[in-house]
Each structure stands twice: as C-alpha cells, then as structure tokens.
Length: 358
Image 1: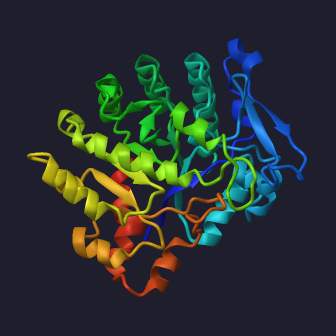
Image 2 (image 1 turned 180 degrees about the horizontal axis):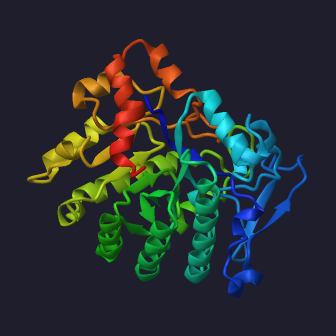
C-alpha cells in the first residue's frame, strides 16, 4: 500500500528566494530577530517583505520555535532532502505533498512583487522536490489577483514538474472563490490537471490586520497564534462559495481538495448546499472530484456513515507544531479501532491518488 501524506509543509529559509528575478533583488525578503523576553516569545523572528513585518503566516527558521518542532532545520527548509525523506520513512510515508508556510498570510501588497516571489518559491520547490526521486511533490503558489500572470505561472510550473496542485485560500485577498475573474485560472488548472487545494490561511487584509493587532489571550504574546479559527472559517467560506458557484459545472474535469480543517463539518455543509442550491451535485462530487483531508481527532465513523469513505484523504501537517500535526498516519488510523482496513487503505492511498496527479 502506497502511503500518501496529502498536506505537509516547508518552512521557508533564505534559499527559497535564490531564484528571485534580479529586477526584484533590492526587494527580496530578509529576516529580523527579537529578544526572547519580549511579547514575541519563542516566535522571535519574522520576515520583512514589501516594507512590512510579516507576523502572520510563515516565520523564518532562525526563530527559537523552529528548534522545538522535532524536525531538523534541513528537513523543515527542504535544504536537506535526505533528512526529509528519512523523516518520511520513519513515519511510514511514501509520498508527500508539500505546501508553503509563508503563504498562509499575505506575502506582499505589491502584486508584481508577489508574483516574483511566487515564481522563486515554485522554482525552489520544483528543484528540491526533483532531488527526492519521486517522494516529494508540492502545491504551487500563484498571484490570484493577476489572473494573466497566474495562468502563465501555472504553465511554467507544469513544465518544471513535481507540482500536483494549486495552493488556494478560502478567500484570495478580499475576493471569494466564486469571483468570475478567477475563471481563466480554473480553466487553465483544469487543462493542466492541477486541482485547487483550498488550505487554511488568510490573505484578507482586513482579517490579517485584526489578527496582528491583538496578543494571544493566554500568554499575551505576539503574533496572535490562534489564526486557525479565521483560517478554518475562510476555508469553509471558500468551500461554500466555490461549490455554490457554477465553477464545477463550467469546468467539469476540475478537481478540488480541502485541507487542514478536518472533515466533521462536511455532512452539515454538504446537506445545506444540496438544500439551498437547486440541482446541486456536491454530494456526487465527493470522492469523484472533491476530497477532504481528515484530522485524527475527527469522528470518522460518523462522517463515513453519513457520506461514505471515497472522499477522505489524510495529512500530517509536518513539520508544523500545532494540533493538526500527526506524523504516523497509518499507525494512528489503525489505533482508532473504528475503521475497516479497506477504509484506511482508501484514506491513505487510493483517494489521494485520485486527487493528486502523482
């Protein structure tokens, strides 16, 4: 059985930007550090991009928190592919789809700079994943605010290889996924067989401004590191907006994955969409064109009783250190005792192979 981790991450380092267009060299990202005994605590480093401290989203691996994640820096940054593959082998994972960390927040207000950073990130990931001999793949990033640049980048990414989907937020800046301006992107994604991978993260300026303005209520530290509530909310909003639009009918071969929000919400939202949208095929699309990454804390027996098991995939969130992380995927599913061997094989192997063009 081929075990596929559908959602892992890279923690970006300075090498990520080594492929940046020379025209943007003076605007390249750099890092700053803070004393540990400040309100930033172990999150004592940040990226400076487009004249701003990026306190929401990715943090550089020079911060103290990175040394507490149970993964080497080389594995986190993908600067040492052997270390990453060794960690996968120890966890019983054969293939891994890697998402960005820094793109979980707004990277740059300047859309041309964002496009250049995306291009460098994609080239870095294609280069590093190609060294893994078929073990590592990645979800590419594109400038949704400029569909023309996004389409051109998708074509370049497909040609480079190793990309198996498009990292997509539940909202792209302040635009819903039902925005017809995104249709050229969806059309090209369908043509290139790259699924939309709607993942936790918030690029809405209004929401990220709010998150960056208040310390954590438990520790009074910055940044506000309970962004998952907002991230989950925007992913579910994105799911309802995308599935409630005509996109899936307009692009009948387009696939989508929903990641890092668990799956217990699915029976309720699918039922609502079916009831509110005449002729909706959302339930029919589950397991055919739409897949959702489950969390180990989900009540999977209840969910599969309601919607079957052909639409679930699994994800480790490695090397992030939050509640969604679970390195030993197959082992943990077996420990539960509420899933059949056939269902487990679907979740860790069969279903991911139908979502990702591995």
